[in-house]
Amino acid sequence: VTIQAQILELLKGLQTARGMTLLLITHDLGIVSQMADRVAVMYAGQIVELAPRDAFFRAPQHPYSQKLFEALPSPARRSGGLAVIPGQVPPLTRRFDHCRFAERCAFVFDRCRIEAPALAQPTGVLARCHLREAGLAGPRAASPIPAAVADAPAEEGARLLEVKDLKVHFPIRRGVIRRAVGAVRAVDGISLDLRRGRTLALVGESGCGKTTAGKAILRLLPPTSGSVRFEGRALDGMGRGE
Image 1: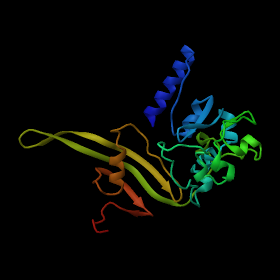
Image 2 (image 1 turned 135 degrees about the vertical axis):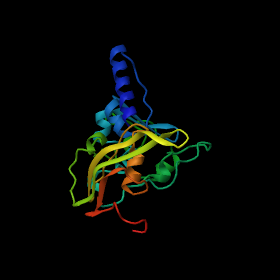
Image 3 (image 1 turned 180 degrees about the vertical axis):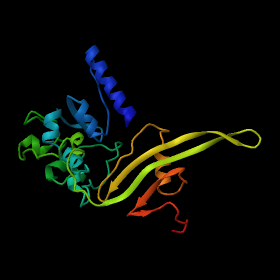
Image 4 (image 1 turned 180 degrees about the horizontal axis):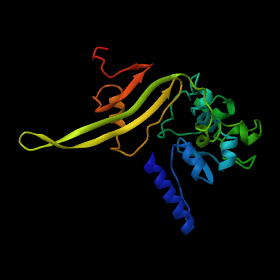
């Protein structure tokens, strides 16, 4: 994640300095919201929607685009399941003489199954959909831009996990008697709280100690020092069975 952010920042800098055009191919709508001026959504080998970024995130026009937004996790959807798109992407070896999304679309009607829609522009946004082409349905409100979702307030519960000054040092041994001459400080004093119903992201480059920290918290590795409490109970000193 951190390397990705550095690369995107570098691309933005090069684009500004050299007047470059960028074609960015991604599954990540959060990156799209930060980087793109225009958005093209593809499905089964075709562009099904083409729109300015703000218009796309404000009100996506194609049913497939709308389903993508409905499937985004957010604090407001924590209590229920995320939307899913039934079925599978059709094989691209077949011949298409109808809408390629028809078999998975909640708004499908007879015309969709016998005629391929054109990339129509009734509202300033190109959308390959018979409903939009005929002006039979207006835009539907989208979810917030994904980059802003993390700022939404979430209900905070009781403290579930408490980690204080956790350290995991691996000794460096040399010589015939394998004497410790130093240590690899894989985790070197981290503290964190995790409250019930909340999500904490532990982010860093490969080798920074994320996995070792997780293993030490779960007691899969013995910590060098520090304390871990779960629901108020200290985990250090407990037997393997417990």
